Amino acid sequence: MVRVSCDYRNGVQSHMPVERASATQCEPGPTLNHHNLVASMTRILLIGSLLALPAICDAQVEYGTDISFAQHYETVSTNYAWLPHHVDPENNPTPPEYEGMPIQPLGDMKKKYDDYIQGCVEYYGEKGDRCTEGEQGRVAMSLRQPQSMRNYTEMGYTKIRAPDHVFKLLKEFYDTNKGSEKLEKWTTGNIYT
Image 1 (cartoon, rainbow, N blue to C red):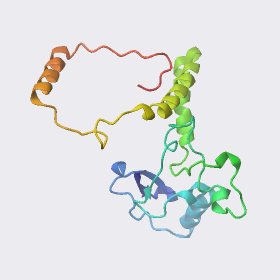
Image 2 (spheres, helix red, strand yellow; image 1 turned 180 degrees about the vertical axis):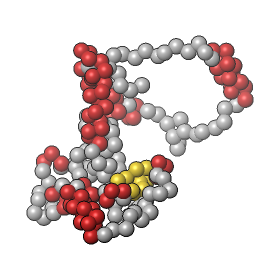
Image 3 (tube, rainbow, N blue to C red; image 1 turned 135 degrees about the vertical axis):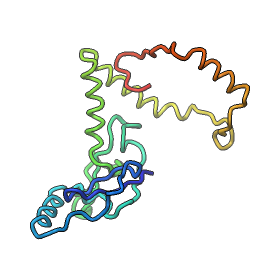
Image 4 (cartoon, rainbow, N blue to C red; image 1 turned 90 degrees about the vertical axis):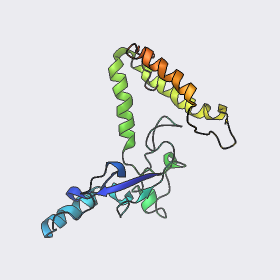
């Protein structure tokens, strides 16, 4: 679950994680007169995605996989709440490409994801196709890896403080080797570690 806070600057409601919200957000903006009320309403009408945003500050938005970043599929959801099949479902059947696709509450995350992949492709130039290949492998691993994991306890795992003799060994190793780190090398186009 992600907690969001709203910001009504310039007549547009945007969202960000609460941890990054400032104290000035969600306070009343400038006094509205007829001109800036009309301008604000025009912006709202032109930006259909605002229909999908929570109407109150500190609303909770819940979402699963493939919303903020590709995890089980090689793209993120583009099924926005302002699309006709959500706004007026009686007169607009859900198009096949949106069947089973979760609603996207975070805005245009597809562009951010596509830009991320494109940045890798551009960085590696002629070998940029390896970024896409690596991404396909990452997504496949995200589906395959969890089923092979085993719990160490009935509840999953237990977090404990390292015994003093174990911590001493780790600390000695760290102190001895500090400053002799080597850059870990990954294959060309690998965009995750």
